[in-house]
Image 1 (tube, rainbow, N blue to C red):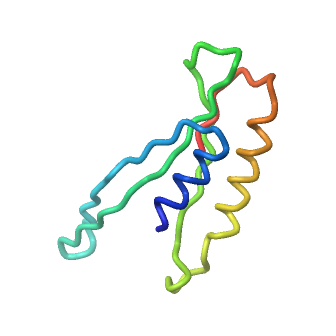
Image 2 (spheres, rainbow, N blue to C red):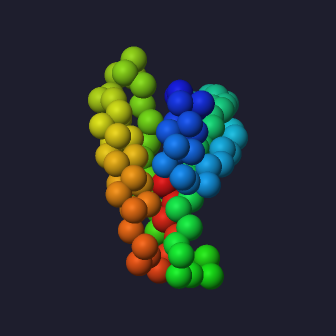
Image 3 (spheres, rainbow, N blue to C red):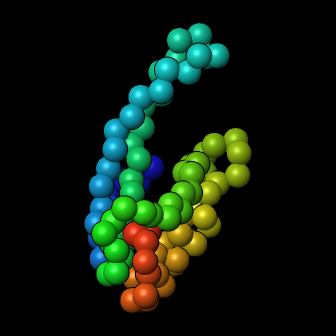
Length: 96
């Protein structure tokens, strides 16, 4: 996953960007452990106390994966973040 690229794009959009490292011990994979990084950006609503949020989630699959890539979903999420940033009536934070 191009983590620095995604962090940079979200920062350019004015989102509060964070990363989260994780490990998954897959129970059906003979003890396989998968490591990864989640990237998320928070668009803070101007009219809220940040008690509620809407989450927009998109998986990442590289083009080398045997399943279909998810680049279009990431592009759509970034476009939605750009649109949402220009609106000033949100009453909930949005986490991308």
